[in-house]
Image (tube, rainbow, N blue to C red; front, side, top):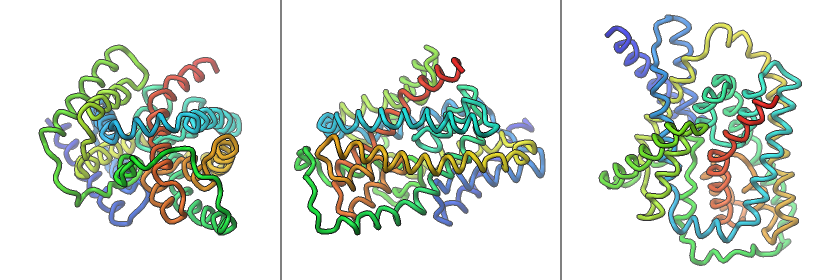
Length: 368
């Protein structure tokens, strides 16, 4: 009974931290704030409690949230962008291995933690499945959040400078018919890395939301029982995607996203110990490698896709940047890129990374 009481107190503390992060408009502010305040609370009181098995529920909710963005229009858009998506995913996997290996060789990080830290997925997604594959969630979370901070603070300035140099140069239009893609397709790529913008959105039909979560729970349970790597998250995403492709997108309520990110922040924060804090200086080298990795992800992959397809350069750069899908899509509007293509490719990036990277990275870590 005492553990339950302290668990509720821990969650309340994490929620306060999430609210602070949200109000400060930090990248992934809810999860970041919840994680930091949970760390401080537990290190100072030694009374924090979080039931580890709850991460399965968090993973299923995360899968449902990703699945909620998918419908037949998004799937059709992915079919029209097969070549750019294949190039994007292949390039990002190679670069993930290269920079993850560099982190492993040039820092004290173990192989699993290094590879998951370099993976171009969602910060919360990578952190909550890291433990399943033997990685250290706090270090993964810190480095993934650092990636977002770098992208959101530095990359828009870089992209605007690049865009300024190509003003007046009308590059080839993308070989994609986006006329049948409504403006709402951008919303389909709503960010999984940031604080949700839908806190004040129209109310969700609860019966459809319940069916979405039920579908995700069934898929997550099946994949988990089968022993699939990160099965709860992947199965949740598959179940949610199937439901939404058959019936249409479901607006995932902002309040539920907040609950999920507070839970993820508390889960990660509870794994930070005094020894973890002492190792933070060891993350300086991985952070430098992360910065180089972001440049390679964005400009290397973007340039390759641009050269091998008919997509214009700015569209390729924005689609190749491993940041929040919604943020990249909105930035593409400012830079006059092809927003539907950016949104669809960013969605494909996240779905592919969540679906395949955990298994592939798990195989690689077992080899090394």
